[in-house]
Image (cartoon, rainbow, N blue to C red; front, side):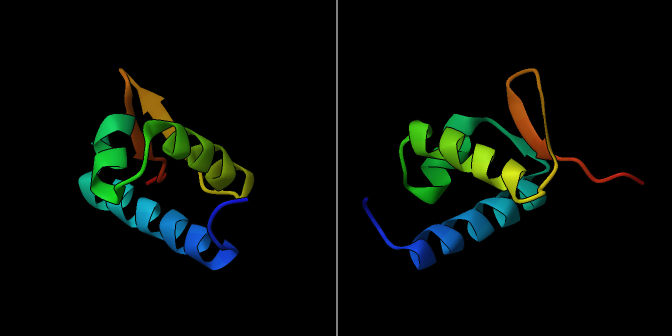
Amino acid sequence: MFGSKQAKQARLEREVEIIRAAYELTVAELAERIGVPRKTVYSDLVDLHDRGVILQEAEGKVSMYEPY
């Protein structure tokens, strides 16, 4: 397995920060900002969902689901 659990946790937290701040962005944009392949971001999005982070996807863009 590549990388450490701490590094992955830090990356997941950073992804949440970026998604929240950007409101919505594509997986490619998120991958570019984090500096990882898109495949990694797709995997991370599944992990975030499994950890209870509610995301939504519309028209190819990812955003945080934050009810009013």
